[in-house]
Image 1 (tube, rainbow, N blue to C red):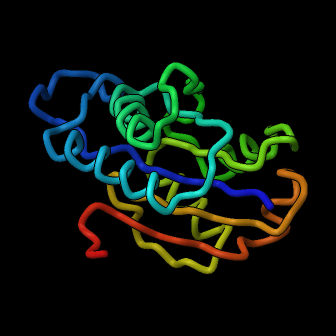
Image 2 (image 1 turned 135 degrees about the horizontal axis):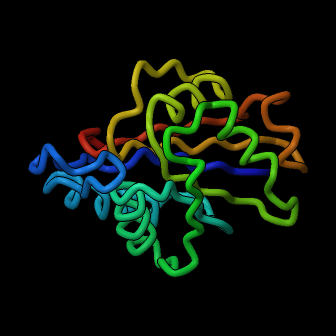
Length: 164
């Protein structure tokens, strides 16, 4: 069984319109939502063996806040520049590159690639993965390279405004 946890970065700040997109921090709502989603994942989320985040400031901040609530060490977050504006194909290729001894992968990134990946790999039909939205995809496979040929056997979708 392989599990992919897909997390879109939290709501970003537009206070400084001249700040490069890559350097935009989280807005107040993003700073509130990320720990909330991390706490939810700590309660009912799957085990995670590897965390990979986009190098964009808002994605990294989201990753640190979410994984902190989950009790995962933030200094083990792998940063991948290619996750910034990655397409669903590039995200899938990153999944395929994982070593098969790992069973749980968590990705922090951006739309539209994240939404398209979720729709391609599951029976979910999302118009938009909202900021700080989380999708947990479980696959009945032994190798990461089988993902895509096999759709997720289960897909759980959560987001900050969802009533539990």
